[in-house]
Every structure is written in structure tokens, then in C-alpha cells.
Length: 421
Image 1 (cartoon, rainbow, N blue to C red):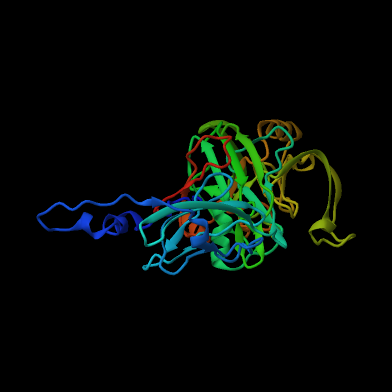
Image 2 (cartoon, helix red, strand yellow):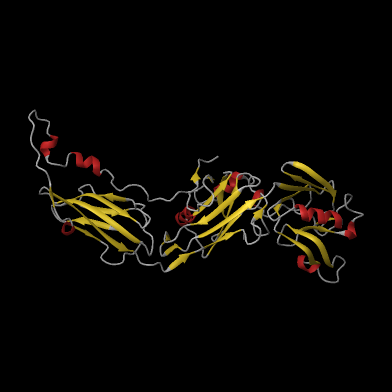
């Protein structure tokens, strides 16, 4: 993703200007040699002035000006990490202004070299700090890896911001502060689900048995007027085998593959007319050994002919609205034959236990040939994979994919923006 800006050198065009700014005899095209007097060393501090007379507002640039008759020959501005902040020297070399953004609550050092116009040259330096931000943007990273930290290859990375970010330029700043590195590396992109939530997914699924690191490293960085990056955050996880299950509502079968190899096909039943199971790719959200399911949770009135209230075993959740793959011993006669459920994928208790033990959060479950609507991309689980790659990339603030190449574990390693693929 976007690398951190502001690390380029500040000596823009100064070196070229100095070639012929030294006494004119040194650049003379005449035939005779003329001696050049060596410059005197002077105290540059009285010759220059900076705008940092106190704590500097980080939304304002640092300016350096020279006394009349004096010119600036070199200005560098660096932060505590040694990285330079970009700046621009005026054509008459009488002033310099930072062009890169300053961080809030950060100490900086400015080094200035000047020529007094009388053969004297000197250098001076000073330090200053920027004031603290009134509003800080924090990022909650997901998925929560408090458990094993191992997920299926369909698991998106998520970011929830502490407040809404609407401005396109501010969103680019947020993406610049977010970094994803993985081994093996992939091509991926961010998607702004809304003003506070972003998802990151690869162009294809994550590689099996990969290591992935996500970080927010925008502390002190200006996001927009009055809003600056808050404390950093990091997240590390791994992927397991590539486990994919395809539920065919027409043939009433579920086929599970592991790393591209079919493992088992089992008879199932899916949603009956009026309760047809959603088509599309879903991601396993969680697993419950037993769960209570009631018709009221999906809008069926208690006491109606369709109402139910059951304790269900070996339940693998794929939507927040209550779609599971689970044991349904009451419908074994219909499994492999007909669709009789209220939207879930039902199977025998033995098969449900086997499926439960074969899958984990982040694995993929795809339903095909159902008469139901398509899976929602967001809001009811992770339907991210139902969007085309082109549509996905368009919803990045940069509109470009990124490479996650870099050493995992170094959250500061920036992803590299790639041309549109």
C-alpha cells in the first residue's frame, strides 16, 4: 500500500544553484585564472529566523527566512526517527518552507546553512516541538486473534476507525498509515465499506499456511484538519489449509475440498421455497457446539405453522442473520433429496460433527443453484468475495492494488502500490 511520504531530501536545486553562486571569478569563462578567496566562517544564528518561536501548530508549515543580503544555502528538517520532511526553497533563496506534513506532539530539528553575502558562511540548528492534537484517530484491527490466531484463507482483514473519515484525501492518509505484509506476498486492496470501516482482501484467496501482519502506524500524522493519527496498533495471524465447501442446492450435496483435493461429499438439505438459502460465497464466522435456534429470530411468528424452537448441535455459522451449516437429524430422510429447511444447510448429526471438525473461522462456504437471493457483500457476515476485483479496487481511496511483499513482523514495512491490474 501507499508508502510514507516526506522522506525525500530537502536540498532541492540548491546544489545546482551553488555551482555558480560562489564568487563569479570561479565561473568566469575568461582565459586568465583568477584566485578565489576562501569564505569566512560566521555565526549563522543571527542571519536566519524560523516560524517555530514556540510550540508549532502541526497544520502549519515551518518557514525559515534570511536577513536582508543573506541567502539560504541548505535547509534540512528531520523528525526523531531521522526521516526528512520535504520542503521548498524560494527562487531568491531568501526563504524556505516545509511542504511535507508535520506530526502532532513531535520534536523536530532544523539545520540551516546560510551565506551572509560578504564572503561569510555558517550553519546553525534548533529544535522545536509541535502541539498535541485535539482529536486522535484510532484503529481497531480485525480479526480478533485472541484465540489460536489461525484462520481460513477467506478471512478478510478489517479496520474500524474511531470516527468517520469522508474526505478522499483524508482516506488516502488513512490507507498510507495501514500496512499489510504477508509471506507469501499477495496482491490486495482496501475497500471502504463506509466512513468508518475498511476491509482488506487479496485479489484471490490468501495462500494456505501463510503468515500475515496488519498494522496502523499513523501516530501523529495529520489525517484532516484537527484530526491526527492516534496510537499504533498491530495484528498478526496465520492461515491454515485452503478449505472450501460447495453446497449445491439443486443436487442437495455438500462437497468439501482441502488444498484443491476433494475430501468428502455428503447429502444435505437447504432452504425450502420462501426460505431459500442465499447463493454466493460466505466465510465461516464462528462455530458453536450447541446453539438455540428459533423461528422468531428470522421473523417467523410464534405459534405459526412454520415456527420452531430447537437446540441444534455442531453449528457452523456463515451469516449474522442466522444461517448455519448444522446437524438436522429431523430431516435425514430429505437430505440428498429435497430442500426443506428454513435457510440453513442441514445434515445428519454424524456428518455435521465431521464438517464442524474439518472447518475453522475464515474457511469458505459457497452455495450454488439455490433460488435464494445473493449473499450481501457486507453487513451480514463476510460476503467480500462476491464482488469482482475491479469493483473492489475502485473502492480503495487510491483506486490501486498493493503488494504485501515485506518481512512479516515489521509493521512499519510499507506495501508497494501497483498499477491497476
